[in-house]
Structure formats: structure tokens, C-alpha cells
Length: 109
Image 1 (cartoon, rainbow, N blue to C red):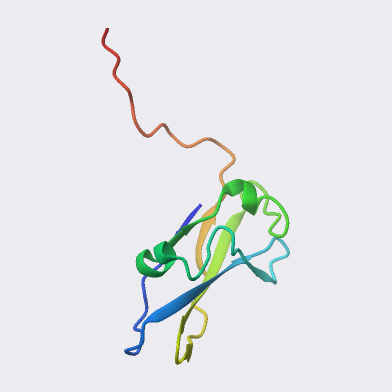
Image 2 (cartoon, rainbow, N blue to C red):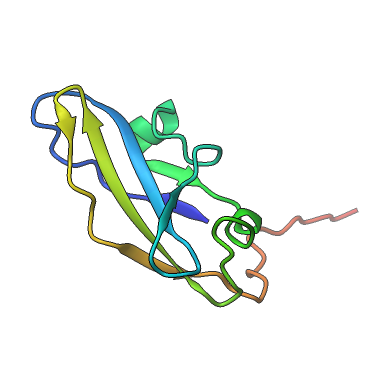
């Protein structure tokens, strides 16, 4: 699953980290995934994006079922402090059917 967002106004101070939290299956708690969405990684910082494998979301600590919506909150951090967390975003669904093929190879021999 690809998580993307728009950078907030940084108040004149560079953003040094994003905290990306994902709601677990119990619906109450959020867990930070530092392995797949490290908040200080340059790709995360400069492109406002991270990728979390569906297999990760289906296992502990998330334990999300197929056809479950994935909800995310994000916080920006600068040297001057932390922003409030964003509203809960996306609600993207973990599909239990395959995606459509994305490209075709032409083999004319």
C-alpha cells in the first residue's frame, strides 16, 4: 500500500521527520511502522510517500483482514516542535482480488 500526503506549511523551519500511524484491527490504537515508513528517510521527507506491504498490514501488530479499510494519521516534526496529527486519511481497502495487469510485453518473433 502506498501512502502519500501533501507537505504542510513548515512555519519557516524544515520538516525533519514525519510520524505515520496506522490504525490496528482493534480500531483504537495506532502503530508506527519504522521499517516500511521511516519518518526521517529522505524519500519520506522530500516526496511525502512511503510504502507498506499488504503482507505487513495483514500481520501483527496491524492484523487487518482482507477487504478492511486502512486508516492513517500523519504528524510533521521540525526543530521547533510537532504539528497536531492530521485527520484520519484514506480508508483505502485491502482488496482480496488481484489488481489488473499494468503493462504488456509484445513478443513478435
